[in-house]
Length: 207
Image (cartoon, rainbow, N blue to C red):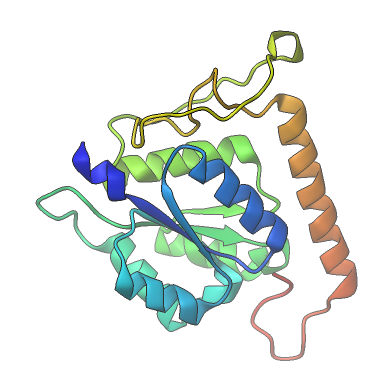
């Protein structure tokens, strides 16, 4: 459909590794992807452009801040007649999970825990894009075994084709690459936990 050409995903996260990985994977399909590191930037972009999905670190939005409230209202709003709506996926760092996870579950808001498992993340994103009205059907991925690998490349493709990756032939991540990315995510989170301690009165832990 024509509207798929302008569908966009807004990412709010302050971790460089997470931002780069998510932007790379999502933009490979041809979606318009914007990345911001501060809640105020997210507010500005939410007002300035149309989005299909917002992926937001809950530490940066808080559970009672203006960005969180706006995202919650957008998520809970009834679907318009055109069946286009904004969906939200919250990223919950390990340090914030004890507080944020039960709160998000109680409110019925979608989230994924950090470190992110890429398989689950991609399927969750596809389901939310389906709800947003920019996909015709959910996407389920089959990743190739090492014996089936061919040289990876990025090739021209039709924007809005309804696949998370450009195509199985044009772009894919092997199981080994996914495992390595997830291992690095876990190491980053472990280092953060060692470096940072929650300040007295702080609502959350490390982001």
